[in-house]
Image (cartoon, rainbow, N blue to C red; front, top):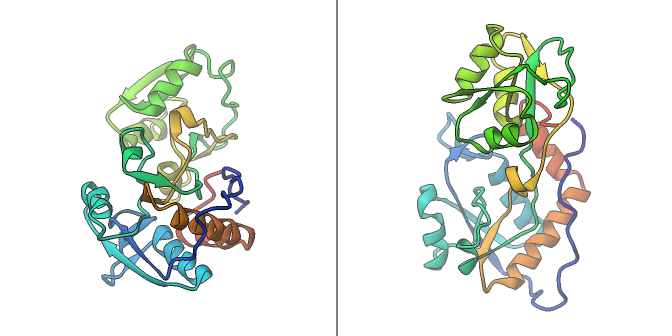
Length: 251
């Protein structure tokens, strides 16, 4: 798997750099392969192992608790946790309570086409062709804005989009690379299709990537986490976790 593109972090401010003595992480258990409960009943996933790696790098004690996703922010605000590692989005409303680490993983969008994919996924090449995309999603918005010459086929989800592609009813599917990777490596696809060239990471549509959220007033903790993330990226740990938990490269 090739190195994963990530946002290049800026140096943390000089102030607020005291190392914490422990970190209480909180996550959900319903976002595989990032955080989930395995068949053995043990919490696992990319985010879970990353939290542990951060604590090892900082040489601090570490706990990882599970809460329902809608309760994660409340758990942090109530001081029952120090950091959320579960893909909580960075929004103006949540920034009243939270601050965020540098992104450690981006989830790009990709085109999936029949194999071999003879068409380059450019607006000119796909003009007049059918692109299946889940209705009401950021992916649908992207196709409408940048591939307006194509015929967008709205579906009720990725499953329906992929079924149309396999049946030859559309020329391409546009969706998240994570969903595409799991479908392409699964039995349903049966080798019919593959990713077309190119990965789309426009933050206005697809966000800046996965981050770790801490309390708004926890600058010291955020800076320490950012430093650990830089080290883990430099040492190749983030790429090792991607190889372990993702079925194929998302890029």
